[in-house]
Structures are given as C-alpha cells and as structure tokens.
Amino acid sequence: MPKQPRTLESKDQFSSSGFILAAIGSAVGLGNMWKFPYITGMYGGAAFFLLFIVCLVAIGLPVLLAELTIGRGGRGSAASSFVKVGGNRAWGGMGMLSVIGAFMIMSFYAIIAGWTLYYAVRAFSGKLFTNPDYTGQFASFTSGYSPILWQVVVLALTAWIVARGVSGGIEKFNKVLIPGLLLLLVILMIRALTLPGAMDGVSFFLKPDFSKLTAESALVALGHAFFSLSLGMGAMLTYGSYVQKEQSLGSATLAIGGGDLLYALIAGLIIFPTTFSFGIDNAQGPGLVFMALPAAFSAMPFGSLFGGLFFILLAIAALTSTVSLLEVPVAYAMERLQWGRTRSVLLITAGCFLLGIPSALSFGAAPGLNFGGKAFFDWMDFLASNVLLPLGGLIVTLFAGYFWKSVGDEAGLSARWFRLWLFMLRYVAPVLVLFVFLHSAGIIKF
Ligand code: PHE
Image (cartoon, rainbow, N blue to C red; front, side):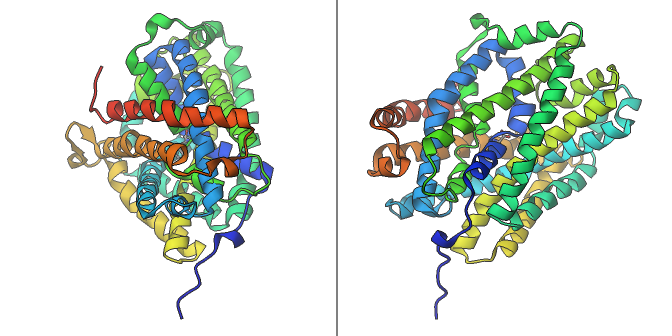
C-alpha cells in the first residue's frame, strides 16, 4: 500500500506571537549585525541607511507578505506550496531553487556564526585581548582548521532546535532568545552611546549626506533588504505554512519589518559610536566587527564583558536565522521524501556540514579552494545571495502578482491595501528585483 502523504493540515503550528518572534528571529541575524554595519560604512552612512529603509518598506514588505501568503495558502514546503495554491508543476520546480539556496546559505552562514561563538569565548576569557594584533589574530584563526569545529557546534545547536519541531523547538527557542537579544543589545547600545566622541558616530549613521549615494548603493540596499528580511530563500514561505488561518498576515508583515529595522538601528547605534570613539575605519568591509571592535573593547573598562556580550549576541542572532534556514530543506524532505523530522534534520545537517567544509577552509587553510579570483566561501555566498536569492524573490513576486488569481483571499487585506500591494508586486518589485539580479550577478555594471 502506498504511504499516505503527510498532510500539512495536521502539521504543527506556531502560536500567533510565536510566529512573529520566530520570523523576527529569522530576519535578524548576521545580516543586521555583521553585514549591515560594514555595508553602511562602505556605501554612504546615513544616506545608505535611509535608502535601505525605503527599499525595506516599498519592496521588502510586499514581497514578505507574498511569501507568507503563498506559504499559508499552500501549507506545504517552499517548493510544493506554489503547486498547491494552483500553480503548475513548473512553479514547484522554481520553488526548488529556494530549497537549494537555503541549504547553500546555511552551509556558509554557519561558518561565520561559528567565528562569532569562538570570539565570544575568547572575549569572555580575556584571551582575545592579550595580543593587540587583531588583524593577525583574525587571519590566523580563519586560515586554520578550527573554524570547522565551531561550525559543528553551530550546526549541532541548530539541528537540536529544529528536531524538536515547530512549536516545541523553533517557537520556544525564539520566544526566549529574541527578547533576550533585545535586552543585551540595549545594554551595549547604552555603553556605546556614552563613549567619548560617540555622537560623531551617531551623526554618521543618522544624518544623511545624499551626495554619498551612487546607483550601486541603491542596488546594494535593495539586495540587503531582501537578505535581511530572509526573502527569496523559502524561509518566510516555510514559516508562513505554519501560521494559523485566523492570524492577520498584514499586521504580521509590519511587525516583522519593524522588528528587523529596530535591530538594525540598534546594531548601528552600537557599532558606529564605538568605531568613531576609537578612531576605527568603518569602510574596511567584512572584517569590521571581528578586527575593529576587539580593539575598541580592549580599551574599554570591562571590555571583556562587553566584548563577550557583543559576540554572544551575534551568535544568538545567527542561530535564530540558521534555524529558519534549516527548516526549509527539512520541511521539503519531510513532505517530498516522507522522511521523519529527526531523520531529515540529521541527514540535511550532515549535508550542510560537508558542503561547509570547503567554505571553512577557503580562508587560507587550503589554497586550492581559491579560484577565479574568489574563495570557495565567496562563490557560495555569491551564488546563493546574489543569484538564487533575487531569482527566488522574482519568482515570488511574479507568482503572487500575476499568476495566483485568488491571492487576495488568503492575504486578507482591505481593498485599498490590496490594490497598493498588487501594484507593487506587479509593476515595481519585479523590475527593481530584476535590476538587483542583473547587477549582483555581474551582468550589468555601473
Ligand atoms: N535574514 C538573515 C540575516 O539577516 C539571513 C537569512 C537570509 C536567513 C535568507 C534566512 C534566509 O542574517
């Protein structure tokens, strides 16, 4: 007898506050605290931040609502939900892209999350501050083999949470960690804002100078709005499939967008006052938080406490995102391959670990993993974040904007909001997302 398909009607669901916190947990991550500060430093400070807010509100929120609506309507995985709400199989095939994308992001995201755990332990123990050559410390750690060990710790924690299920694992864990994260962030923000010279950092971050903007900063801001809201990778779509029918998706979208913005704002109010106070260059790229901030913490009273707190906070934020990334392929495997949750979690985590190894070793441990001008890690990031993610976003906008005729019934917006939403999905978002895609894939240049 053929096995009964696991129906998703009977599946585990989020409570309404649990869903909002879990979705904020997915959105808030290394994107807010590691990537956002350094791209803001590179692409124009306050003017870039403003642009990011515009992209988040005008494009990010409509696409977020579309993902949640498709997920709740289909109650399936990131691939099957499209088919279940009335798309043909080709849409399911396109949805598969996001399942693959989530798996890929997970494989390298866990490595950076592992770095932050290592830094947290080193900071709390004070060892980080015994040698003031922070660039050298960063290089010697990332070019060795130990990042693999820390990646395993992150993957194991993620797997443990996801294996406990949606309401018993993902929701429970986010309900504790997301408010906890806010508390820690506020403590650090107060510390940063009371440093001498902190206000110069605040004005760099909040007083826009539009002459600093370029066409490139606009596209980076839009791409980042997508990454930061966890769009285009099936994460919000999968979480959407666990939302109760009574919950308002419109208000949830506003809460998630507002939450994401709040955490980015606070992260900026920690990093920039600190770098300005200590005369550290903001525009030094991805190493910013790992190389620059330890120098600042070492010169602060109770530096190892504040430094440790900062890196622990990064690790927590990363973990609430890796959980959402792992759930995407896990939900797919449970539905499509009929595997149980534990089995799906174990096998997929093992796959992420294997795919992560070359990324972890491409910072110097294995020179052969550096080819075509990029490290293996950067290739993975490029493919997932710059190609699959905007492509996934495009598929969502086209599906919800043109293909799924009764999208409005599931979204449950008032007539006015619905018209505005559809307009953004049909005419604005796809064009802009296409630009981001062509730009970030290197097809058009400015
Ligand atoms: N939004 C997460 C962050 O900002 C990253 C992420 C992207 C998570 C895509 C899930 C899906 O760190």
